Image (cartoon, rainbow, N blue to C red; front, side, top):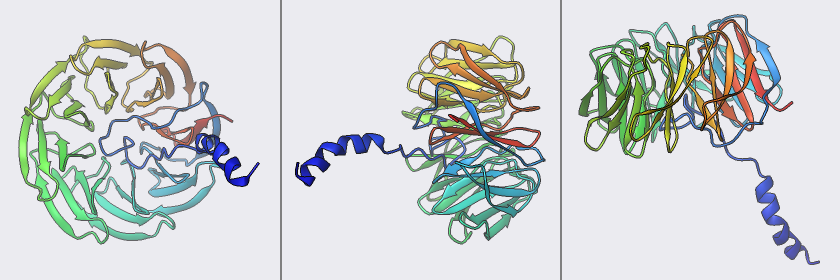
Length: 364
C-alpha cells in the first residue's frame, strides 16, 4: 500500500489519539470563569501522587503544558510536574491564597500581603511586582496584553502584562474578593459594595451597575449574555447583561452565604453554600433542580467535567456527583479541609487541602 494512502487511512485514528488541549490557565478554567473542563476524568478517581507542602493550601492551581502552578501559605509559589508530582521550582513571594493565572509563559498571582507578582513560568524568577493596600485573594484575567485583578483595597487594577505599567484603576465602595472575567470587551466585577460593575476593558470606564441583594465574595461566570454569581446574603443570582437587570434570585431554605463560585453549563448553575449543600439551579428560571448535602461547608467552587461535578468541603472530602441527578458517585477523604477548588487537565484533577497536601487524582 502506498505510504501516502496509508497515512491518509491512519489520520483519523491519529487525530482521535491526540490528547485534548485542556489546559487550566485561570481560576475557573477560562476567561468566562464557567468552571467547565474541556476534557473528562476517569470514572473512578485514584491518587496518582500527593505532595506534602506542610502549610495550608487554599490556592486553586493553574495547569498548563503539563505543569501545575499553585500557591501555599509557606510563602512560596510552586511549579510541579503533573505526571510525576516532582517540584520543578519554587519561588518565595508571600502567603498565597489567590489562584495563579498563566498568560504567555508567565504566572501572575497576588498574596495576602497585598503584593501582585509577575513571575517567569519556566524558572520562577520574579519579573515585576506591585504593592496594593489590601490583601489579594482573587485571580487575574487578561485582555490582549493587559492583566486585570482586584484587591481588598477596594480597587480593580489594569496593568500592561509585560512590564507592569498601570493602564487604569477602578475604585469601588468595598473590597474585591473574586476574580474578574472578560466577555465582549467588558470586564465584570461583583464586590462587597452590593454592585455588579460592568467596565470597559480598554478605558476602565464603568458602563453600568446592577444592584445585587448582597456583597459578593465569589467570582461571577458568564454564558450567553447572562451572568451568575452568589453573594453573602445567601442568594444565588442570574443577571441579564443586555437589560442590566436581575433575571432571577435563588435563596436556599436554610440561608447561608455563597462563597463558592458557580459552575455554569448549558442548563445548570451549580454553586456551594455554607449551608453544607451544593445547589444546582435551572439556568433560565432560577428554580432548584437538585441539592446535594455535604458533610461540611461548601466553600470550594465546583468544576464540571463531562457528566460529573467535582467539589470539596471544609471537612476535607472531595465529592464526585452526577451532573443530572445530583447523586454521589464517589467521595475521597483527603485532609482536614478543602476550600481550594479543583483544576482539571489531561485526565487529572489537582486540589490542595488546608493541612498542606496537594493531590493529583486520576487513573493510576
